[in-house]
Image (tube, rainbow, N blue to C red; front, side, top):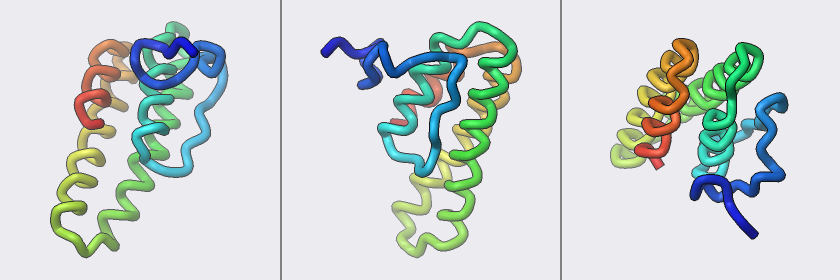
Length: 106
């Protein structure tokens, strides 16, 4: 099956008018968000992407409070900060930069 931009998401799964279901901050979830960011062009799409990034930011924030392993906590802290920056990039319609930043965090 062909994958979208190497993100591991099939083109049939990517519709910028749909909201990505965010229940964790796994690589698969992040790849799905990245794939949707890459095809988002309308204001409404960008609002959806911001909401998805907000969800990842919230989940990583909860994990930071409870994570005891310092190595894992640092990795989650980097993701938490990166997702915040990616959110701001999406808000500024800088989707290419947001996708590249998120990809660098995988």
